[in-house]
Amino acid sequence: MFKLSQGYAATMEEAIEKARADYASVVGTIIEVPSLYGYSGEDSCEWHYDEPIRVLVLPTADGDITRICDNFVDPYWDVEVIESALKPEAQRFTWNGEPRPLPADARSFWVDGISYEFEKKKAAKVVGTP
Image 1 (cartoon, rainbow, N blue to C red):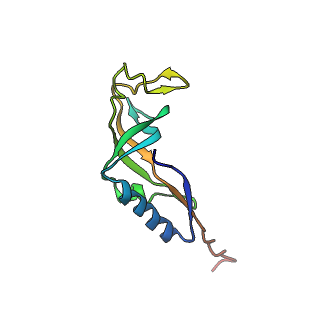
Image 2: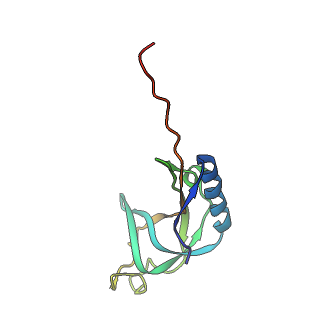
Image 3: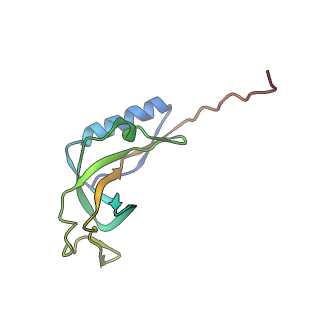
């Protein structure tokens, strides 16, 4: 299973380079992940499973790979579900032992890449008015 974790980088630029390198190492390959994000109906959804889900990592926009949240590079990777999780009889897709296949209209899947924390430089404090 692909190990999702958190790393550290000294600068935002270093964190972005690490996130791009992680993505480059898996794009076009099948990985196993513990959770999956996507859409069902009009809702953005998150699905967790007892067993890992096999997904193919798809080409992903650079802005999603280098997404900044506070002092983290927090990437998303577009994926395609490989196993037949969309079928109601997909018993392997369980949460807390209960069957939980993906909804039939589930689409536009993504997973989290490895997040990197970086040192956030403090902005200079402006004192007084011009």
